[in-house]
Figure 1 (cartoon, helix red, strand yellow):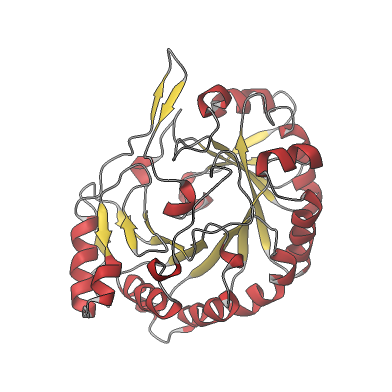
Figure 2 (figure 1 turned 180 degrees about the vertical axis):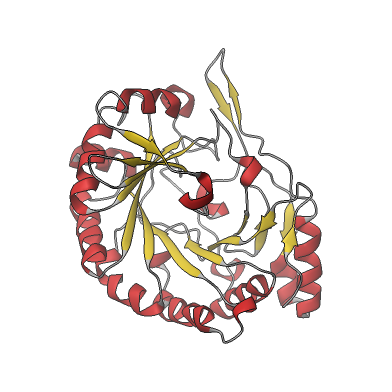
Length: 340
């Protein structure tokens, strides 16, 4: 096995979020502009290139691999790619074996892929769902159909997948739904994760007006629900801070990039579908692995580039909240380009 990746803050990198496309069949107001211009196909890594990089990262000690987009399930032949990735879960050398393969999706195509995901070795997924009201869901996603996403979630649960619902908390948009969302998740046996708005790219919506600190949300929820803190060491591999909802038995997570950053325990990096390695969601620095791949780089060249990028990983992100004005600021690239 190659040496494990350690950043300057002493954080061991064990989690890779791998984007397979910047394309999506929705245009969520907090993620994309309504009239997106997507990347030319030639700029997107092919599956062979993505698989090669996945092997390199697993060799470096990455144990948790999450497939993202855009919407990953819109990419042609994604099923074959996921099946091939799943073989990393069964490598004979424990030191070089992937422990978990997961996926984040908007659920629009999940009904047709749920069984395949299980066969590939996926055991849990995240589904983006910001409202249980059909009209509101359509306004937020600009193109989505609530019934289709709910059908996908049902299919995932029937296939045996653990599901976490990801909900971006937005003041004046969906802040009256959190109790209902929590109760519904309890009914279907899903966890819920609330996420503060992340200021990534111009989406055509003034997100500062909908910024909602999750500390306020939690205080409101605690008036109705019993929320028992879960120790961070056993909660998850990602940035969410979890509680157990006593009334339902399910978990409730909070991702708080603005009100309470989670940088001190960051163990992850992101690889865009163009082969750009981002060591921090809130920074532009990283490494261009596509140029190396297409320039005939050896695995050692890739190892060196990845190691050098990790050695520059910042101690914290640069998302900024101006509390006096409510303005939120961050990188100009869209979330869909970064890979979530």
